[in-house]
Amino acid sequence: MTEPDGGILGQAAELARRGEQFALATVVWRQGPSSSQPGSRAIITAGGEVRGWIGGACAEPAVLREAQHVIASGEARLLLLGSPDQFGPAVPDGMAVVPISCQSEGALAVYIEPVGPVPHLVVVGRSPMAHTLADLARTLGWRADLIDGADFATADADERSMVVVATQGHHDEAVVERAVAAHPAYLGLVGSAKRGAAVLGYLADRGVPHDQLDRVRVPAGLDLGSTTHPEIAVAIIAELVQLRASGALAPSVPQAAAGGRLAAPTSVATDPVCGMTVAAEPDSLPLEHDGVTYYFCSAGCRQAFERDTAAYQKRETRC
Image (cartoon, rainbow, N blue to C red):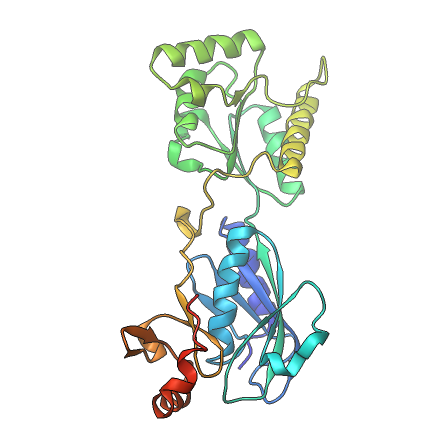
C-alpha cells in the first residue's frame, strides 16, 4: 500500500532537518498493469534505504540506482521505466528510458529530485546579537543552535555547518580552535580585524595549520560600516545567504546520514534476455557461462537464457 503523502513528506522534512541527504521519487505517469499509481512517492536515502512505495520488484531497483546518481550529482532526473518499444522515438529530450521487467507491459514515469539538508547554523555566544542572529536563521527555516562558549564542542558542528563565534573576547581562542577542528563550511569570528589577527596568530603559534586558519572570516559578515548589534546580525546572515546562493559553502565531501559517506552505486549488469538493468549481486539469479557471469531480472529470463544461450549471448552488455 502506498503510504499517505503526508507521511512521506513529513519524513522528508525530518530527514532534511536532521541534515541528511536523500532523493524524493514521485510517480508522475503510469501505464497498466503496474502496482504503482500516479502520486506514489518514496524516499531513497544516501545509504540506499527506501521508504514509501514507488513500484514492485522491477521498478524499485532501477529507481534506487538512479536515485543514488541524483544524490551524488545534485541534479534531478525524469525516468521512463518500461520497454523501449513502448516509447519509440517519441521520448522527449531530458527524459531517460530505463528498461524494466520482461514479464509486464506496464510502464512508469518517475521524477527523482535531490533534497539537501536544511542549513545548519551554530552561533557560539550569549550576547543579544548572538540571539538575534539565531532568530534570523530560524526565520529563514534554517536549523540554528545557540551555544555558550564554555559549552561548545567540536562535535556540535560538521562539514555542512556554518559556525559564527560571537564570544566577545571570552576565550575566543579556545572556541575558534575547537570550531576549526570541525572543518565547517563557514567559520566566522565576530570582532575587529585587529582582534581577529591576534586570535589567529595565537592559534598559528599553537600549531593550528595555516590553511585552516585562512578559512576563518574575520570580521564575520558583510561590511556595512558602523553598525548596531542587530545590524551586525543582519550583515552576517546576509553574507551566509550570499555564499550559499553562490555555492561557496558546499562541503568538500558530500555526506550521508549521521555524517557518513554517500553509498557507492551498486554494480549493475544488463539482463541479456529482456535488456533490463539489474544489480550484479547474488539476488539477481547469476549464471556463469563460458567464463562470463550473467544476471537476470527474474527466473523466467534466466530460464529463457538457458534454453537458447547462443541467441542471447551477443546481446549482453555489462555496465
